[in-house]
Amino acid sequence: MKNIENSIKVWDPIVRIGHWTLVITFFTAYFTEDEFITTHVWAGYVLSVVVCFRLLWGFVGTPYARFADFVRSPSVTFGYLADLAHKRSQRYLGHNPAGGAMIVVLLLFLLGTAFSGIMLYALEDGAGPLAAWVAENAERHELWEEIHEVLANLTLMLVAIHVAGVLFSTYAYRENLVKAMITGRKKANSE
Ligand code: HEM
Image 1 (tube, rainbow, N blue to C red):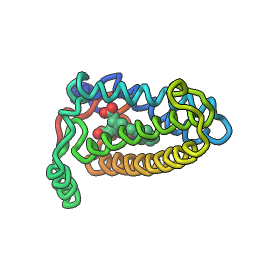
Image 2 (cartoon, rainbow, N blue to C red):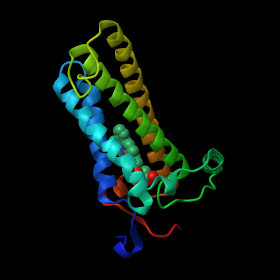
Image 3 (cartoon, rainbow, N blue to C red):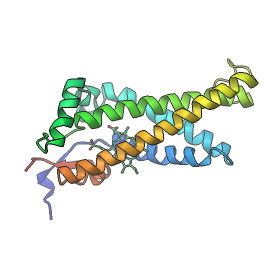
């Protein structure tokens, strides 16, 4: 059994609770859009709050949660991917450069999907936080419905790539990253 002294705390509770809340709310919203609009809308609201808070936490949070820790230049990111393909990539205690890039893209797509949903709710039903500023309008409603659907499906695709990346890293570094996102702890030293 691995000794706890051999591991180090990497993910704080806000990162972990935020992550699993995103997983639950994203899939809840995705699969309730047709028949359970109230559930869909509330899952979207909770997801929006989590994403906004995570963006803020990226500037003021614990060291490994900060964007400064895991957002790298395109050359570092592509260099990392090339190293990964040649099985000589360096292990990162926080997010690796490719994972970090995906996280930023995911957060932005989640934000765009949520915003387009809130716009659509105002245009279609005259409801939601933007209803006071955006009047009901059948034509614009169709356009925003399209935008919302396309963004939601692109986000689902990104999630699939994200999960594939997590599973691949788990295999490449022989380290259970899903467990680390639950406990917050990772192996202290690479071997
Ligand atoms: C069930 C499927 C999922 C699994 C197993 C999973 C697993 C993980 C793991 C292990 C990490 C940490 C990666 C690392 O060690 O660098 C991570 C990070 C992340 N994942 Fe997922 N993920 C899943 C679904 C999702 C979904 C659906 C979203 C968005 C809707 C998402 C958004 C994120 C974000 C934003 C981070 C960065 C965490 C942070 O720094 O706050 N994940 N995920």
